[in-house]
Length: 177
Length: 463
Image (tube, chains in turn brown, purple):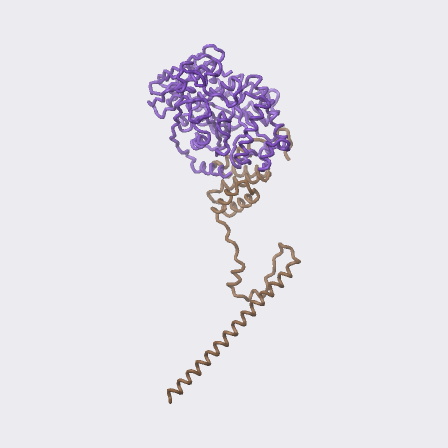
């Protein structure tokens, strides 16, 4: 008899535990659904609000997002990994003369981020060559002078010296722009 | 540009100058477009290795009486190239083959006093004349030493232009005859400001005291030059009269733009590459006008009997500095052929020896082929001459049966490092002003004193 009473008590206890667990799970799920809906509404509101702004104006961070789990925020705002020195050089070489503006931008970026690179003279050459391809001859000359000063023994510098620092750009007697 | 970058990268990492032990095995010269034929001369790989079977064609060029006897620069050489007796081979005591020279008939028919002898030059191996071993004295297209001077028929090579003038034929024969064991000294002049200054640098220095054999000009500056110094054309004429050779390039402005140095570097699209040789386009109208301009100058030189080593479209390579390099390989080849067709067939210019001048990265896609090219070459401003890697790269494009010129460079190479086989360039040409800024006097003196170096006073009479 005693055993029966204990067993019934245990079953009741277990039932209570299961009920509590179910209640807690329901509450959690309901909360998540509410949070997701809030984000969607916030995004919609933000999108509508931003239509009247200049594209370059920084958008205010929606306050509700501050309450979101950190992991979600990191995932949605992940910045692209900047290319390393070798990747930049590979891209420069692959571009050749095809996109001088992009080549110039990449070479400048590489100069800024990797000033001590072994490929620095070659990069400087790309700066000069890109400027020529953009028909910015006088800027190219300035870069060439700087390059020759900085890398006097480099064959890259010798190449730009021959092509940019020897012949006058204009014919003798023509006024320089 | 990729090729260019590869080349420069290679240079940057091989500044010590990688040695090249390639051996030229030039055996016969038929003068045809068949690359299986080679030169008449051979280059000995080491002392005591006779090259054999060589002939001189220099009998054609001996009227000037330069460097009289073969073997003078070798040890007891006894080169005996006899004009007209093909097949003879001279050897000096070191076993080098004999070379040019002898007493072949001069262009005028007068006996020569000994052509440019090079037997055993500097111990680097003799260099035969053109077409010796294949000639066997039989005449015809085959060469026999010394006969070229009279009519040109004795030289086994001829310019790609079948109607080339006799001086142009003589010049090309001469270039072939020295290629492999001698090098022509050269200098580009500062055409835009003080063109006389470059040559006077050499002649005015008592330790050098000799003028370069080759004077480089630029048709970009045809109209420039002071009255006393003359124009590119008049200076080329004067240099020829003084015994030298004229090599002219042209920094042409990208059509339809006017000529200026910066305009030679303007962008040029693929469409423009097509348009430039398409009648009726703005590019073509401009281009033809420019060609007419140089044709007029070339005609002046032709009338004066002056042959020109014409180096149009210099520094050709994919994505190079100048507009013609913006075209694809096939487009460039079409442009090259169009240009020479126009100059030769339309304008009647026949005093040309065509030099196809690559940059530091010769590209076979841009090579018109030997049927359209007399001489080819490369250029570099690296500081580790003699640029054996570039020599090899150029030869890989042009083949082993065409002279290879270092048509632009900054540092005078020492012939002792070039021959017999490391990088036996046909000529070097120092860029304007670089003789002062990029060379030591000692370097130049040494190179000019080399028995392998030909200076202006040593160029035979090619008229």
